[in-house]
Length: 237
Image 1 (tube, helix red, strand yellow):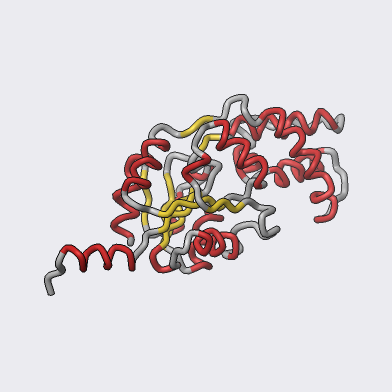
Image 2 (cartoon, rainbow, N blue to C red):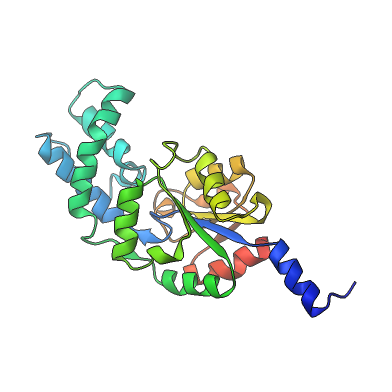
C-alpha cells in the first residue's frame, strides 16, 4: 500500500525514535580526569597506591568505587560495600577538582547531536556518573541542552546494568522501548539494553575498547566513529 504525504507524517509520529546515550567513553573521553581523581583521592588518604594510565585501565574505566577498591586492596585494608559507599563522597570531592582538566568531546559528537535533533530523534542520557557531575561536565562542554531526559547513577539510586534507569530515560521522553536505542561503550551498556529490551549500539572508539574486543558482546550494531551513529541507529529502528 502506497502512503500519501499526510499518512507518512502520521506514521512518523507513531514511530517516534528515541536514542539514549551513555556519557563516559561514549560522548566524552573522561579517562585521564577520572584517573587523576583516583590518585588525588589516594593522596588525600595518605595511601601509597598509584593508578598508572597504561596498567590500570580497567580499574579506572569501571569508575570511582573500582578505584577506591583498588586503593583499599593496595593498602591491605579490609572493606565491604558499606566501606566503599562511605568513601565515595570523598572520591567525588577529588573528582570535582579534576573534572574539567582534560576531558573532551569525541570528534564529531556535537555534529551528531545536531543531526539527530534535525531528524526529530528524542535524545536522552543514562550514565553511571552521578547526576551533579554529569550536569557539570556537559554544561562545561556545551552539549547539556541536547538531552531532554537525564538520568545519573543517583537519580533513581539504581545504576546500570539494572534496566530501570534506561527505562526511565525513555519514559521521560515519551518513547517506546521497541523504538529506542542505547548507545554505549561497555558490557554494562550492552547488558542494560538487553535487560530493558531495547536495541544496543556499542562504540569502538571509547573506553570499553581500551580494555577488550567488544565484538563478543554481540550488540545490535557497532561503529568506529561518532559520525556513523545516526545512520546506523536509523537502520536499527
